[in-house]
Length: 117
Image (tube, rainbow, N blue to C red; front, side, top):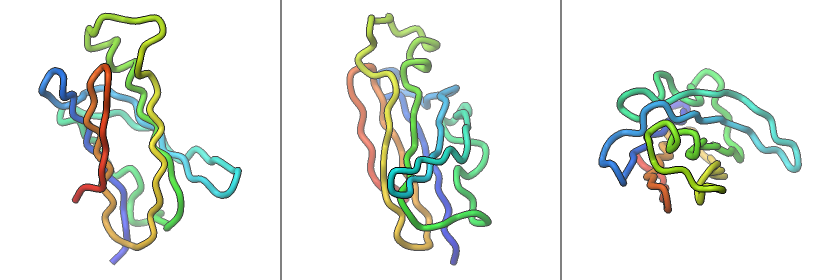
């Protein structure tokens, strides 16, 4: 079995999927940080394709960058200067060839994540 990476972003303040949130994927190798892909969430708060599909999956250290501030601005949350949550980087390791699901539960003043299924 080969691995792959997915996500799901839910707006817990509004009780709905976070549609239109930009996500970037980076691979980390020591001090090197390589941009691999940029995606947007769909109406279900997911990406239309796997973030890191089986064909290119490698174990290692990665970073998902969630552009929460832009999403919050677009969804009508009153702006702050500066916004409490703007860009949310999540660094994590993938050590086995399996499905890694890294969801984000988001509100204007907090977030959480976990390894999902």
